[in-house]
Amino acid sequence: MVKKKGTLVLVRHGESRFNTLNLFTGNIDVSLSSAGLKEAQRVGRHCKKFDYDVVFTSHLERAQETLLVIIAPQKKIGIFHHEISARHNTYLNLSERLKTEVLSVYVSSDLNERSYGILQGMNKTSANRTYGAGKVLAWRRSYKKCPPKGESLKDVYERVISYFERHIYPRMKRGETILVVAHGNTLRALVKYLEHISDENISSVDLPFAQPLVYTHDDDTFVRTEGLYTLERPLR
Image (cartoon, rainbow, N blue to C red):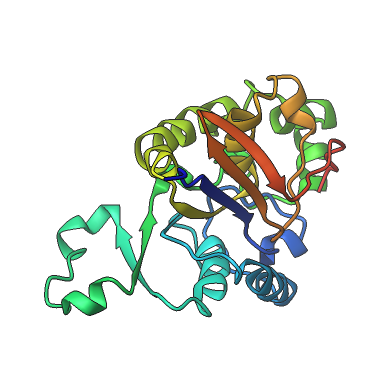
């Protein structure tokens, strides 16, 4: 029997309302903009071709809004499992037939966007005037530096990869098809891990809104089979 390759589909959420106002969003829970909703609908049509075994997302609304659009056309029924209320996550009264039609959606704060600390909710131009453009650039782009009370990309990497290795990677090794809908920095951390990108070069990687990256897994190797990112990360 030919071993089935695991498939991982990564999707960054669509544009948020704070994105349209040029504000630092971080882990503030902001909804999609009208453009972001259209982006989610577009990526939903693209991702319809996959038959997902399981889905993972963050606690933040913009990721979940994007996810809901993607899984709406799926034959299976999405049921959310929230780590903060695990005792409510059972569905023992479902029939055996219906249980086979469930698409489990696991929600974790480990997949939340990076915290920007004191910058969150601040206009990016105003932040440059207040703290200095050079310092703000270092906080935003450095792998290890971060704004006061915030997270560095290294901090994000450590929580995301720990979650990936515990909950997602074992399923890939079993040959499952997995969807992860999250955020620019959490997914950049994951791409760094999957593609062995250096600490220096990851600062240049930019993931577009609502455009999937698809990886297959075989013999402990990840191969990107679909999707592109740029190596000239713009300041947004």
